[in-house]
Amino acid sequence: MKKRVMVLLLLIMPILIISFVSVKPAYAVIANIYVDPPSIVDPTKSPGSTFSVNISITDVSFLYSWQITIMYNWALLNVTGVTFGNFFDGHPNIPQYSINNDEGWVMAGQTLIGFDDYVSGSGWLFQIDFLVEAYGGTTLAFDLAGVFRPTFLLDYTLRDIPFTATDGYFRNGAFANGPGDANGDGVVDIFDIGALSAHWYPGPPVGILGYDPAFDTNNDGSIDIFDIGIVSANWGNTYT
Image 1 (cartoon, rainbow, N blue to C red):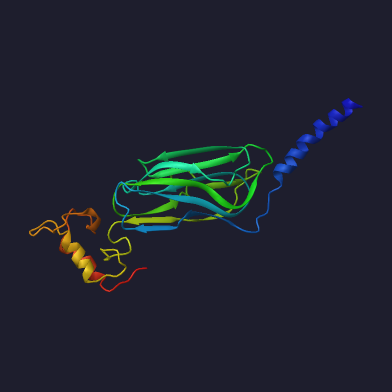
Image 2: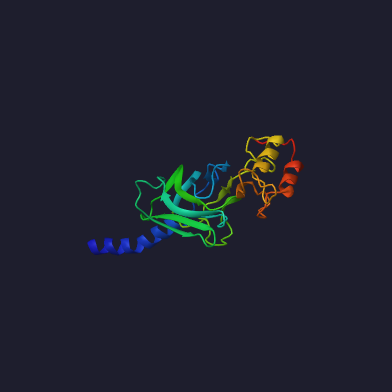
């Protein structure tokens, strides 16, 4: 009798496994992955300063494995570290990450160990720590096309989970608020002309504060009439 039961179980088990794997979960809501905060515009983030962003997810169902790659301007930012979030807390998992500051991307991912395990809901996946290398602006963009490492979400059947992605943005230095706003007060006016004049270079006369690349709007190594022209072209604009 026991032998018959064992034989029956051996025959049924593959069918049960195939049935389990072949049942694709249904998704009433599309998940979203996003950079938090979505935008960092800070004139004070000079080269050598640091900041961090979180990569979070909302409304995901049956998440078993994920991999996310963020692309950035490597001349402006370098990644110095990755910290995994709490979304998979309490579930045995395998984390991994890779940083490539020569090409400008960072990849992180986690896979659960339990065959039938999964997590649903919203939460924090991981944190990226950045070191500012220069002045300028860059998107913090999800690699959806697999330019470096593909971004994907998988359910417990190892099928793709549909999702949307919301990129982030970083900008520093003068004009971080917008074109022409040299002093960062949100208005393009005579005070921006004064800010450029104080850093006027090359002279004569050289500005009393000397050359500062943060005020070099066209990055040509000079703060001159061409930079003034950008202020003039945006005269009266306000930024919030």
